[in-house]
Amino acid sequence: MAQDDEDRRAWFRREILPLEPDLLAYARRFCRDGQTDPEDLVHETFARAIACKTWSEIGNPAAFATRVLRNCALDALRRRKVLTITAVADFDRIDPIDEAPGAQSIVESREELRALADAIAELPTQCRRVFTLRKVYNLSPDEIAGRLGLSVSTVEKHLVKGLRYCSEKLGRRSERKSKVDERRSWSGRRDHDAKR
Amino acid sequence: MERETGSRREAVRQAAALWVVQLDDPSCSDADRAAFEAWRGESFEHEAAYEREAVAWARLDRARALRPGLQRPDADLLAPAGRPRLPALARSPWARGLAASAAMALIVAGALSFGTSTAYATAIGERRVVVLGDNSRIELNTNSKVLVRFKRGVREVKLIKGEALFDAAPDARPFVVKAADAVIAADGATEVAVRLGSDGAAVTVRRGAVDVDPARAESKDDMRLNAGVAAIYDSRGARSRAVSDAEIDRSLAWRQGAIALNGQSLAQAVAEFNRYNHRQIRIADPSIADLRLAGYFQTTEPNSFVSAVTSAFPVRASQGTDGAIRLSRRG
Image 1 (cartoon, rainbow over the protein chains, first blue to last red):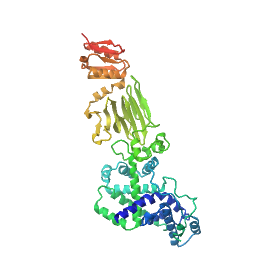
Image 2 (cartoon, helix red, strand yellow; image 1 turned 135 degrees about the horizontal axis):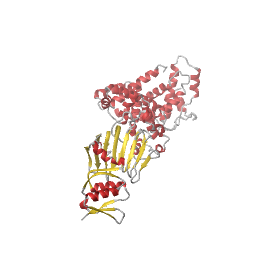
Image 3 (tube, chains in turn red, blue; image 1 turned 90 degrees about the vertical axis):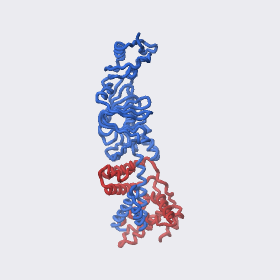
Image 4 (cartoon, rainbow over the protein chains, first blue to last red; image 1 turned 90 degrees about the horizontal axis):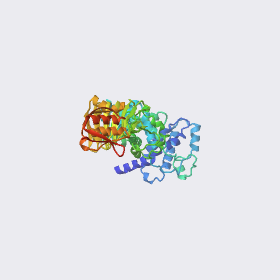
C-alpha cells in the first residue's frame, strides 16, 4: 500500500507537476471575469489529480490534467451565487485539450540554472543568505544558525519563505514549448462527456 | 473558490513548505516524520501541496552548481550586486557554451574559458602592473602570465606562468587565485604573492589572509594563511612557515627591479637571475654551487652580479659557446 502511494506520488511529480505553467495559462482563460483565482484552479486540479488511484491507466497526463482543471472551473462556476455572462460564455468557448504531448522531464539547462540563481537573488537579503547557504553550500539549518547568529526556527522561517517564493516562480515558468496549444481544436468525445 | 481561497491555498502551501524544510533537516526526528505523515494523510490537497513544494526544493539543489571552486561558503554568493555576470549569462559567449546540465556546469566552472577572460603577460625581464575593474591590482614579475576572469560572481585569476603579487580589493565577489591546481581564496583586502615552481607554487601573504586549497578534491588539505606566513605546496604536500616583514620585502624586491639575496646559494642566485635575462648564467663547476651570497642586485644587470661574485669568491667567469656566462672555480 505504501509502495502504491509512493508510485502514485511519483507519477504526480513526473507527469502532472511539470504541467503547472501550462495549466495556469489554461486556467486563466476561465477566470477572465476576475471572480475565480486561476492559481486556485491549478491548486485544486493538483489535489484532484494526485487522488487518482487509476493513474497508471492514464495515457495522456496533460489531457487528463486539463480535463480535471476544466471540471474544477465548472464546479467553481456552479458554486457561484451570481453567474456572469462572461464566465458562462468563456466556459462554452474554451475547448478541452487533447492529444497534448506527454509531460517531459524538466530540462536541465543553463536557463534552469539561471532561473534558480535569479529567483534566489530576488529574495530579501537575510532570506537570500540563509537560502544560499542551505541550497548552494548544503549547510544544515544548525550550521547556518551558528554561522549567521540566528535561531534555528528563524533559519527555518527564511527557508520556508525562500522556498515559497522559488516554487511560485518556478511554477510559473515554462521550460519548454507550451504543451497547451491554444489553436488545437477539441477532438475527444470522452472529454466532452467527462462532466456534462 | 472565491477570493478568500487564495489565502487558504497559500496557508496550505506554507505548511507544506515548512514540512519540506523540516524533513530535509538532518536533525529531523521520527516524531516529526510521524507528524508529517499525519498531516499529509489529512487530505489530497495537503499531499499535492507537499509534492509541489518538495519538487521545487529538490530542483533548487541544482543551485549547487553555482558554487565556485572554493570551500568557504559565501552567503552573499548570489547577492544581486555581487553577480554582474548573471544578467550577462544569456548573452555572453562562454555562457552559450555552458553545458546543458547543471552537473556539467559544475565541472566546466573551472575549466572553460570563453570570451570573457583576459590574459596579461610579461616577457623576460619585463614587469607589469595591471589594475582590474574592481580596483584589484596584479603586479606581474618577469616572464609571467595570468588569466583574469570575472565570472559568475567570482573574481578569478589564474597564474599560468611565473610570479605575481595580487592585491585584492574588498568586494562582495570572492577573489580567487588559481595556481598549480590550488585555489587560493583571498579573505577581504589581501596582498598575496604567488610564484609557480616546477611542480607546485609558493604563496606568501603580505596583508590580509587567504585560504589555500591545494588539491581541490581533498578539502582536508585546506590551509589558512594569515599575513606574515609563507607556504609551499607541491607533489610532496603542503607546508607553511612564518616569515618576517624583511623577508617578505626581500622576496618582493623584484617590484623594484632587484634581487635581494640573504644567504642564498650561488645556484639559487643564478637561477633567480636567469629568470630575468636572456643572457643566461651557468655554473660549470658543482663545487661552487653552494657558495652563499648576500646583497642587492639589479635583475637586468647580470654582469654586475657576476663581477661581484668573481671579486668576492674564487670564481672565474668566461663566455660559454652558447653565449652564456660560465662560472667555474678559479685557481
